[in-house]
Image 1 (tube, rainbow, N blue to C red):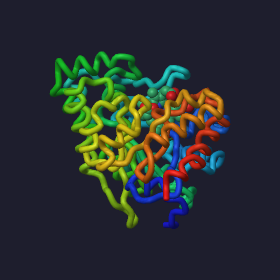
Image 2 (cartoon, rainbow, N blue to C red):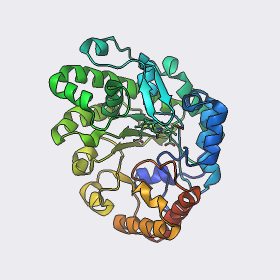
Image 3 (tube, rainbow, N blue to C red):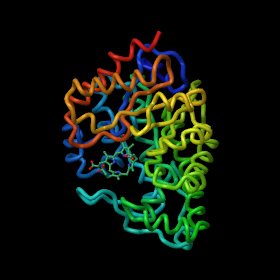
Image 4 (spheres, rainbow, N blue to C red):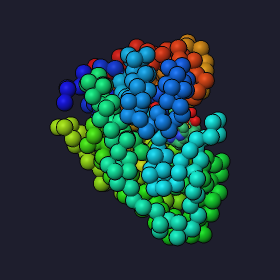
Length: 355
Ligand code: CP3
């Protein structure tokens, strides 16, 4: 394998010294880019982009070609490939988000769910990872990812996106054994899926617990964090002679950072509701931090974006252990020039915080 030309993202996750703070954006390949919309039109729809490794590679590279400032690439795929591989029949209704042909509601449904084999049932993702690694040719590291068991379970039980997770939370309180069985099957699947991605060439992995923050403090521990801890303990942590850092991102998990930092990961993703300097005081001796600019700042003018970047860098302070990112995914109507101003500001303003 070719040596990495830019490894500051991996170094920062392990709190090793860097020249400037590394940066990438969640959902960096997506609808705010006209070239992405063109590729999606050519492929036909979103799932065809995910399932064809050449297309997945093409759209993964688009933000890197437009923004040489990016310090990492992220596999183009979706967290919902797993429920699809479990037989739920994922589809996207234009403008309406994800849907499933089969919804899960009973213990019998959960008992019947198969545990997918990543190479057989999700081989298109493994092929996308190896295709992207080849195309990157050492430019920047490649991030693999999966959804957390709790976040995946909400989609599987609700049948799509939800405002209040009513069915999943009803199951949590009325039939916790059923939900635990589902989460256990998902934890096994996510572990082998991420290990498959690592063996195919992913150099760091992120677990997206997008909806963990909707739980009570006690339920978060039992129904989300416990399963992420189990996954982390089963992951391959070194490959090709390098550490493979693990990032846990619980959106709205700011109240529970100490316990998330104890789950065994190398880094925590932060949404914009926490102050990154206080988060560093609380957990910075254990883990690196990734985040955490409010993605709506990108609607503002470049000067305002730069001010906000400067504020976050100053709050984190001197030294390594910070990967700059947005606190959630970039939104479809952001002006691509504003995203470029954001990325440049991170590198320009962060040099003063590193030796
Ligand atoms: O970050 C990247 O650039 C990599 C690609 C990526 C996608 N989805 C592509 C995508 C990643 C990492 C995800 C993760 C994902 N998917 C999450 C966790 C992160 C988060 O945002 O909290 C979740 C909850 C999903 C589920 C999902 N996928 C939803 C709810 C939707 C519809 C909403 C929307 O944004 O349209 C998707 C579709 C999706 N996944 C798109 C993209 C680029 C848009 C599809 C399109 O082109 O129309």
